[in-house]
Image (cartoon, rainbow, N blue to C red; front, top):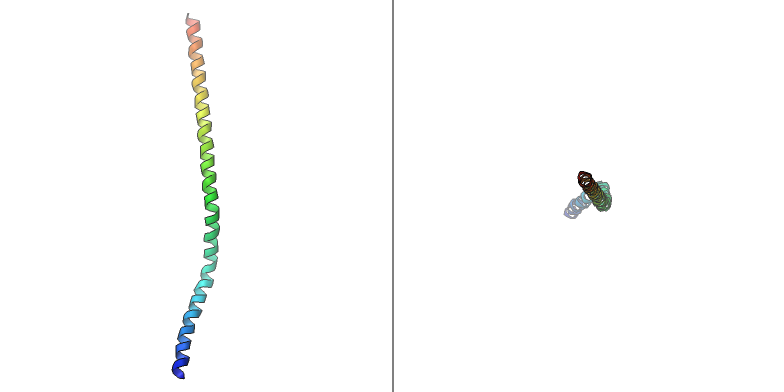
Length: 80
């Protein structure tokens, strides 16, 4: 009988310890899920912002080239 009580006490300690670990790690798991859900949205937003910046730089460079070309054309006409 004592052996049965001792064995059940040891088994229950393992269950209690596992439950305590589960309860202690629950907030961490919650935060990890939240960060996991937000991170892809943030990454997508970063890519979108980077793409918009590159397009704006391309438009500015194109406008600068067009302006430089117009300046070259007008100076050639003035020289003739």
